[in-house]
View 1: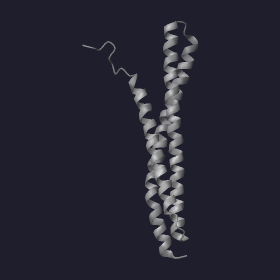
View 2: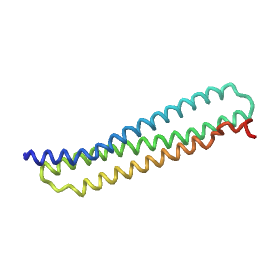
View 3: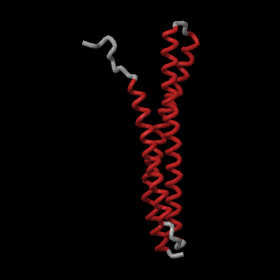
View 4: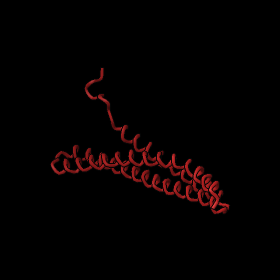
Length: 147
């Protein structure tokens, strides 16, 4: 094998690795949010056992429904980010092999990379909607502090 081709293949493969590190950071951020959603749902489910007032029960059920939606969005985001990471890994392999074994695979590399970016964008959209839902219910001190 030609060492110049190998080093050029490594250079080509390094660029997508930066996106891969962004994907890893996003997975961490979304996983932390999902853990907080799960913790809140468990707390509410425990509170539900001791409630007798129908209005309190309805409020808890409404919040649980919202948490369920947020959990689904976080799961979709993690799934898309995982697929994105897999596609980036595929892009790296394709670029490296294309340079080292002299097989024309650039179109496949382009499609794999663009698909990974599309998955990343969809994951960001899921994350954005989840955070909108989470902050929509916050009152930020409006109760009793209005002037």
